[in-house]
Image 1 (cartoon, rainbow, N blue to C red):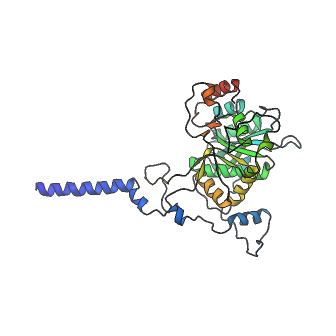
Image 2: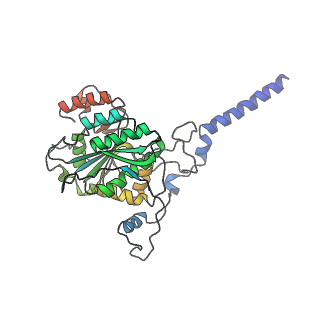
Image 3: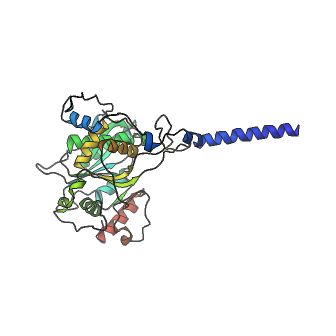
Length: 357
């Protein structure tokens, strides 16, 4: 009897281990395809040329190949929009597209007073918009209506605002760029729980691959310091990681969604900067790139198909660096994990007083 019980416990333990390994995604990893050898992602073909032809309203490529129909659209309706050039003939040099959620009123107000303040520089035209989705709550929708009337800085679309709709939010932001703000020179997408130094943003744009070693003084010629090779700038903190296969993870990805053992290189979506050319190419190429629910991964896929190289800068912080006074943030461009808007504003004011923000 004891031997039989031991055998039962042994089999139960083995089954338990198998279930645990499956839950942790160990078996899934065994069936992954090697990214470096087998990577492909719909749509296949010369996607950049298809996108350029569509942009120019052509139905054929130069070699006579018919331009295929796009496979991906973000056909949501704008509930609120802002014109980019509010003053006639005035073109913004930098446009901030701040991804926010409807309840985050205090964060938006703090940003308007600090790094999102449009009159911060006399010689650099800055525009600010907050990207929002929709809600089934009428009180939350009323908040967006009120802010749109009061500040005129809301770009809201009619998709439901949820974490896994961040790709939609980002792409509706890019759509707004192409339709309403195509004349800006640079665009910064950033989440509303970030600290941002606008001075360092401008210094980074001037020398993306050399910042902060070759940070320049700000003046009216800042935008002309950018090198030609950065015409298609896509800059931020660059990762290349592996998909998470353990089933308890918020970021669990099945083999059906993505069968490869590595992601393409991608910029963390919390804060990144695009030049005009890069933004426009990403928007049109996205229409030939299958949707993916993680916005940073999706933009990495689109950038790969568009032939846009990613520019890494460690001063875009995904995790908040220790703050021990303004000097510790001297070169910080953007930092995540400022959930408390009061703390963000206090940090920004101290750094501004030290001429670092």
